[in-house]
Image (tube, rainbow over all chains, first blue to last red; front, top):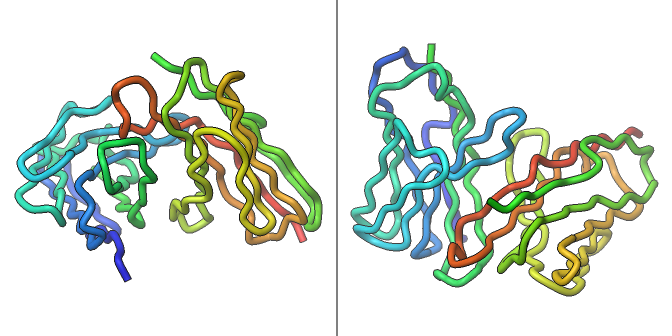
Length: 113
Length: 110
C-alpha cells in the first residue's frame, strides 16, 4: 500500500546544530508539504513543493530549507537549530495542484536543547 | 488573511452521546478538510468537503460554503473518537496550502 513515512520519529539535538528530517511518500504525488504543530497554533505551513526542483516558502519558513530532487522525497533542514524550533513536524502530500486531499505522515517530534 | 475558527475548543462526552463540531471561516474557500488527530498524534483524514454533505459510518459532515461554515457530526460516540478534530481550508489562488483551525479537543468517557 502507498504511504508516507517520516524519519526519525523522535530527535533531540542541541542549539546551533544542523538537523535534517526525512519525508518519503510512495503515492507518486506531485505535491509535498511540511508543517509544524505547536500548542496554541495548530498546524502551520513551513515549506511546500509542487514538483521536482520546485520549492516554496510557507507561513513560517525562517530557519528552514527544503530541496526536491525526486518525486518521493522532501527533506526538511534546520540550518542552525534553535529552541524555538522544538515542535512536532508533519509531512504531507497530495496528488494535484488543484484543491485536493492531503495525506499526512506520522510526525517527527524534535527537541532542541 | 483568512480566519478559521473552531468551536467548542474542548468537549467531554459520555460514550454513546452525539456531538456537533463547528468550523467557521472568514472568506470563500476552495477546499475544506476535516481531520482527526488521535492520542498518538497521527492525523487522519475524515472528509474532503468543500460543499455539501458526506457520511462515513457514525461520522458525517456538512459544508455550507455560501454561509462560510462546516459542521462535523459524531453520533453514538466511542472512546476511540477521543482526540483533536481539525478543520483545514485552502482559499484563493493557493489551492494546496492548507490553513488549519486550532481544533476541538474531544474526550469520550466510558
